[in-house]
Amino acid sequence: MSEEEKKEEQANEEVDQEKLAEEWAKMAETQSEEQFEDQSEEVDQEKLAEEWAKMAQETQEEESEEVDQEKLAQEWAQMAQEGKKSEEQPVTELIEKEKLDLLMDIPLEISVEIGSTTMPLEEVLKLNPNSIVELDRYINQPVDIKVNGKLIAKGELYTVENHFGIKITSIITVQERMKLLTAEES
Image 1 (cartoon, rainbow, N blue to C red):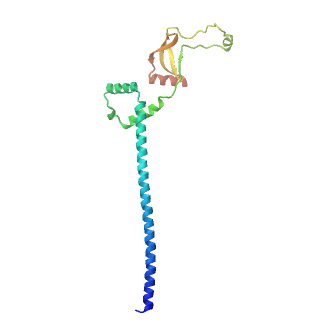
Image 2 (image 1 turned 135 degrees about the vertical axis):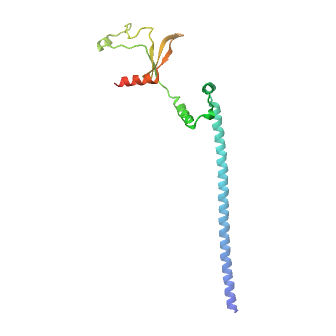
């Protein structure tokens, strides 16, 4: 080998070593970035797990605080009467119960109708204090209990500590309510 060929090989080796050094640097940099990403993902996973645990604990605390003891006792008694256990309830029944629980807080207007009458406008305009309006019911007849304007029960009037009260004597069945609704539409 001549000296020129040796110098070329050395120059190629130097170039190869420079390329090799650059490739190593790139690889080291990529590995450190991947390790950093892996570590940050692990930290995020740990933080996420901690947040989930906190949320679960808070939810359990809220649920345990909101438990109504009387309601729970009534549910247990009902389950005992029916001979069912809570584990035996199908999933669909539980979902329907949850939906029904959402509706339980909706306020409804309850009114008691003690009677009614029809009067011409002329007589209504003549009404004044101490006027007596005759109704279509006797004093001992049951009164209508309406929820949002729909008849649901019958009852008797009472006074309780200088307040009016009503004792429910019968509840209208679903079939009777359907008949009333269809009669109203006709």
